[in-house]
Image (cartoon, rainbow, N blue to C red):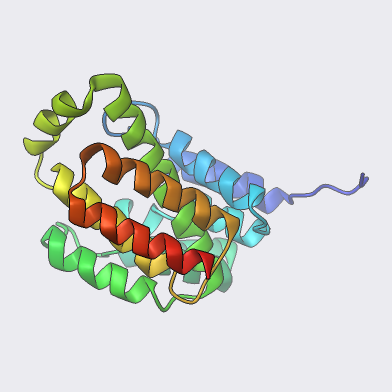
Length: 214
């Protein structure tokens, strides 16, 4: 036990700042305040060995993408430093508004993520794990067929796209990096593929899981 605070006032400032810039945004589907996602991602980062810098970056990982692009990234850099800003930048798949077409944008993001440093991958993995956890909860609550029908009506939410995306995330994150958090994510991706994926998806998740075990 320590008598010193484990997190500094800068973490509290980041939480307040994240709440302010995302104050009008809600989570898709569940309608919860968006800050709930950011707090969950930051908690995962801390629980799996991340330091305060990474936890702050987790709170702010969507700031540039959803709240102002590069000017927002510049504000993050001034307020919280280069290390936080670099992780936020690594987790941002576009600075453009409106966002470019989903598939090529996502492919470029995944390709870049494969080469990012461990700190950025930790934040990204926590983000993806929380997102897929919500997806699995939706599938379990609605039932597979009802979920598939609903998602088929959304631009990028069809079951095959969801499996493609999360398998791509797993491959990118497991390139040159290993952590128990990645194993948690792999299990969630496997569950998604078992529920709504194809035989090819299941084969790929098996291959990627074996890579983690080497």
